[in-house]
Length: 217
Image (cartoon, rainbow, N blue to C red; front, side, top):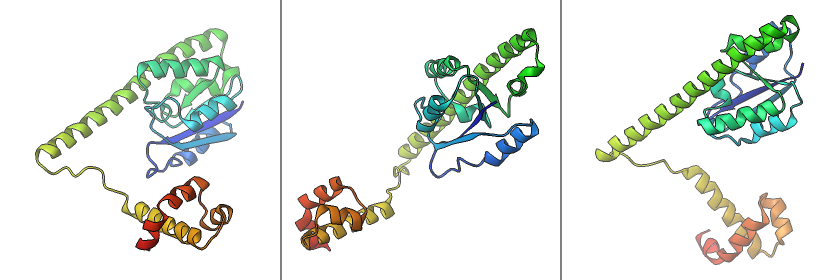
């Protein structure tokens, strides 16, 4: 039995690996080990996520996808959820979630009769659909509350928009100044790539505005 664990957080500020130790302990409690981990910081409302798509591509027929909760796998609208289920079904992949005891049967297939397996699979499928629907509703409710808060703040003149990443802008500006100085010194694009650890595209972009950057330096 090959178990692939999928861990997800919505933003880069969140720890996508937060539940890793819990999933390892869960697998051990069921006398299994997790063979591969797929971790990413992406919105669950998006179907095409790099690590999720890689997991499905890597998986073999009958593999298990282990998640902490169904909302870690998806907060999709109905059409995208149906598409994801079809992708999983084509490889006969089973979803096991800590929050869904009926999914545990996938970890002990040899202990079930064909009849009981069919019954549990039907129940599990229904529960998965229900939890996926709840996850999507929670996502939409939070977005609606966020939009209402923004609208209220705008009406009260308190909304200033998303804060600018001044630190990143400062670093980008400094890197551009360094590239401009290296160009001014006659260094080749290849040398600058190595020294400034940047792309040729950025060097070419800086070359166009070099006089301005050198003056500002």
